[in-house]
Image 1 (spheres, rainbow, N blue to C red):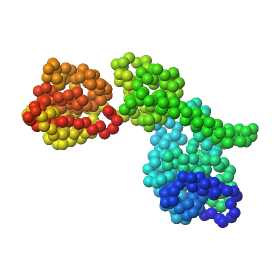
Image 2 (image 1 turned 30 degrees about the vertical axis):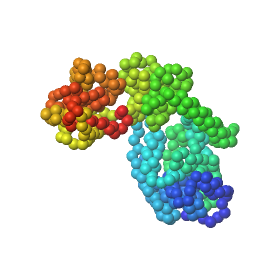
Image 3 (image 1 turned 45 degrees about the vertical axis):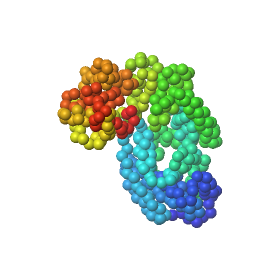
Length: 446
């Protein structure tokens, strides 16, 4: 526990000012508590401020299970929070390294996912000025653009970082003066990790010649933030008329200069929650979109999504497994039918004088199936039957939707195709009961 000695500086005042600007009385703050010096100092400060600022405080400790000491760190945080009378949630996560990810990145992803589950108004993080400088330099060494080089923000949504303008040395002085205890993660000394190499080997050398590098990096990153904001405003301007109903016009991309086209494509991906790819990959995606023939089947994997092109538009769709082509659902008169493997629900609405003739439909077992090839439909009684391929093309339905759009059969007779019409022989007459079909997608398939 902390002592009552005089504080070395105005750290309490600084944190109080940051919180005062953003936190309302009665709101809930959840501290990401690792047990290291930075988060222990922040815990002590928040405990001291909670009555004055009238917020509710809790903490969450993420156990990555990567160190043999991980259980001890969790126990340390539990004991400390009990002494402070602060509720603590210990989240045990599994760190999975995906292809191309480092252990650092995988652990960060798992930690952020655990923190995101917290039911709170703000998640408070102990990132400080040294962290800011390290992150900035790491991003530059990875060849980032202006968006990647922008500074971490004191507030980003419900994330709060009250230490961002404070060097770690001030936190060390505070901890010493208050008599605080903390745990040391042995991996923080392992210079095989990029961040640790910068922290222990590169930045001390840089500090000998440029002692104010932290503040200089912060100023530079803020300049990049302004540039990134301008690029976002330009993309928003270019998106008017180019992005409609979550589709991006390839023709609009082609009319822009290469930098503006890349900027708009990056903006389009970001709208779908996709992390901006590397510059080389972004250029390759743009080249595929612009150079492919109109009927080309472009398919670019993007995290859990895919970039597709159909006619003059780029689409972002979920990367879902293809359903079994032999899939068959039987309809027994239900108002709705869950078609989980097809990613949606089919709604059957009663009608009169329109839609599918119920009498003719139910003359044989009614089933829902997928295209096998060769099927024909006659939506217009004045014209001959046509192939489903032609009807789908005429309706502007993309190929990946055609593969998951159910067809309604009466026995072996195709009665209707969603989005393309009802066969002439099954259309309800003005004097008989009918059925209308409505497809409710469970995701972004269409």
